[in-house]
Image (cartoon, rainbow, N blue to C red; front, side):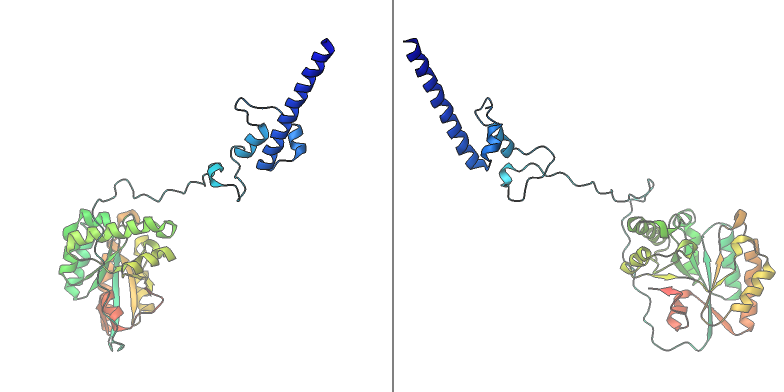
Length: 317
């Protein structure tokens, strides 16, 4: 009797095992697992899902599923690298709105001015000491000049900036911080240009369409920014090096040797070594007299561009 009951229990256990294995074969068919894989994965979880099936449903964390895995069971995509945040304006950035785009310079008529034209340019101002004296000399000699102004200096001396325009001279943009624009991002360059444009417009009612980068350091990003604003970059052909304390005699000789129709002279109306530009004030009336005697007429850079006498390498659109 005992042997009969033992055989019956063995038979029932065998049938249970066969049923379980049959169920696993069905699961293998559904989830694409081989019988060999199933042989080592007979353990059932609490929810009666084979470990092999669970592994197929939920891939290991951090691994992308194969392309043909349905999206409903795909693991979350691994996030890509964070983008570098856009450059922010300096902490003291002006909240003023971006200035309107100024009109471009007058179109070139194609006829070159017969006069011998030359342009005097002055960087880094305005200030309350040298810029007014430069204006006095120009007024006395009947000469015109172009002043490339720095934003914070305009905010300090708005009346001097307005006087420049009132006396028939021209104004250009010389950046906000007077730092090397070539090393800046497009966003930083835009901020340098726009803040200075707005400051000049607020002080004078005029929005420049000319710019000179500090140190003359231009870049594709700067030129792109100027084109977007219908502006042009102005270089120079004669550097007096007045900022370095060069002697009046050496500067005068340099100008006399290199002046020609279409020349653009670089000088300063603020700054310089030890903030001293006394040699500039001494030089200016001398070169005006020298060049006038040679038949030169002193015009703004705008007029020089319209005359057709400027070199393409000097004016960058």
